[in-house]
Length: 461
Image 1 (tube, one colour):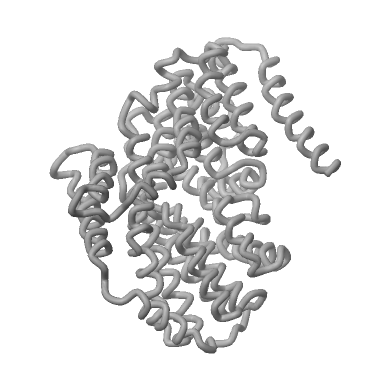
Image 2 (tube, helix red, strand yellow):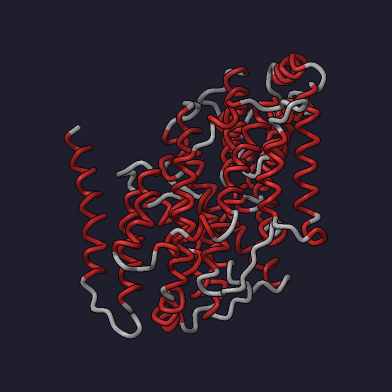
């Protein structure tokens, strides 16, 4: 207990001393007072979240207040994320939509149906869980990660695969679906945080719903390759005793599609149709996430109940909003171009592939120190400034590389999703660290082999 207390005080000390050190830097024409106050406020509050010194909701409430108190920007700029567009309403709607799909039973059915196709083969099971999990993430706009983790754990437990190579392989799939998928599946949070951050540097930058999926196609292929490599490395039993029977029994219990599930399918198709048709109807994509989730609750539809609303984490939403505001406030004080002015000369002559690779390494390091949400709020703008200074065509590319590290960890605490996964007790800490280090090395190699050539071919670099 004493050691834990000392460690907590050390984190508080770092959180306070670093902003104080920045405050002592003299301001001038290039490094202005608003820039300095922006860095002081942002780093202090982000460290509070990264070290988990305060609950995320309190951190989210504090950041815009800090911007105003320090004189960084006026109130309307600090709170611009709430008043400038419907992005935050879209995020709330997306969470309600995912909860409603879960409540309808549709997400559970998707995964169990995929499991029935494996016929007892472990490799087929792994691929079926991967595809089903990605479909769940797709239809829930990345909010369905818990569904896949829980169901993968259910498979491990039902087949008594705890602390076995077979069980670890199944949970590796759960990790890929819940974390790596964030790099190539559309999410309102991603568009808001990443796109808003880049706009600090490129004012007219627009991140569309299909951006991550199309530009990171090789990264999708990589995930299946990684599973195949681990399957070879771990030498598991090829056929799982009772595997086919488990899925068939569980799927049979569901019976035919219920009325609620059919309605959920129709509403999901409706939302995707609205998103895809945006170039023709010209309406804001945000509106679809606000209006269509409401349909789940209408009389005659009755797919969702109050439970889908109660399960929305509004504290997390406040925190996300504050992280998203970092981009707007940073743009207001011109922090992106300033960072580019200072750092770009140091990168002079650095080959673009090496720079992008170093962005991944930077992400791996920062993953140890701060949350993925904090990274998404802080780094898209500065990295876009550096990338454009080096001649990279697509300004989001450097942060896309950095965020690959979202799935490249050493310890479970680095990502809340993985903390949940590890908490089920399917593997030891040694097992967790071993497979994640191996996966990190494989990912870094495949980045050079698959991703970089694809980006050059498509003109993103």
